[in-house]
Length: 547
Image (cartoon, rainbow, N blue to C red; front, side):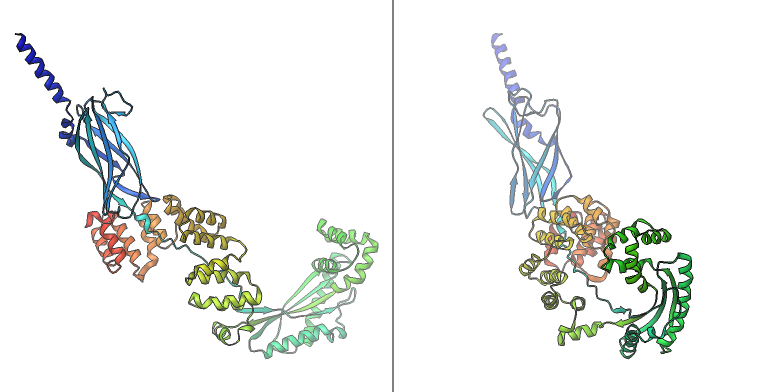
């Protein structure tokens, strides 16, 4: 009987050992469930972050074992092992995360840096369960596929704008003559019609008629009264002077092709009064100007100024007589050099061009390298700040980035210059420096460039907001990254017939995300001729369902 009891105890002990054998966990590993968020690994700002949820069924995890799990990224070119994770059964006296025998979900947030080759990879969990001297490998569990690198399609070549010229295709000249009246009179004196002012005016009209580039489009007759003697009286006097001046115009200008246009009566000439006082050497002119700024009522102004008797004598002698007048003001259109003429002059007689003409001539050159010499001329001849900046832009766009940086360093910082420095930083992969420069710039172009930084740093919503309504590849990419595929297609519509392989590639991504197999195929056919993009497409997780 005693022998039977000993035998029974031995059997039970063996059974208990068998039940807690690590092999059991290895054999039943298929009952363990693994899920990832996101399901497909995604690279954001050069990193992959993923949450792994492992569901252990009841009675799976033995109470007296350790489980060591190593997350491993398997990809072309090798493996990348993440830090090992250790779990323990509920009876183990240690400080690791406990998994109860009753089962449950264990969650881990994993993160690793993306490495080239990981475009086509998968994440698996490798485990080793141990108890004492026993250890058993647990079958690996595939957790997720990846990695999605669509954001890396961003075009990092930021936009740099040339500064605009102020070249006017038509220049306007306003030669004028002035005739003066005696106090209280509206009669035009003959001496005034023979004076230098009228003769210069007639000469200007004659020159305009003989110059094939110039056209006199009209002459205005404007009459005034000095601001003394009362507003009502001067209004009537000004009206009479406009009539007499209009008649005198016919004697001054006998060319029938030049007719008087508007005939105006201004009345009291307070504006002219203020200008003449400001230009004069009258001792108390600052006091007079202060009165003008304090009072707007003409009667009050006149009263306050007349109260300054000594000052008023100076005004009556130096200023008021010049305001009893009428003016003939011509408008002459002067046609500037045409684009063709500018092109010829740049080659044959560049020295006749002024600053604005040089800036316009440079802008007409199709190749950036051809703009350089013209901008250098404008810098040399006029110390032009705009030409200095544009010279840097032309050098940068033509490929000489070192020379461009040297020229840009000579510029005074403004919004355009800060944006340019941001583009340089972006090209050097100095993302933080680029962001700082774009923020300092704050203009419309830097806002678009800042969206590139947002995409590179994973701020997709901010990028999409900055590029909302814009056309172009980066605007489309930003919309894709926030799931706005209709907007993405609209942003790409500007590509039209350009057959850009990169635009076609992004079109394929949009179609893939919408499950449109035929559109994916058609778009990728346009990519086939681009070796780099074709190789990418073969590995891209975006197209995994369509390969």
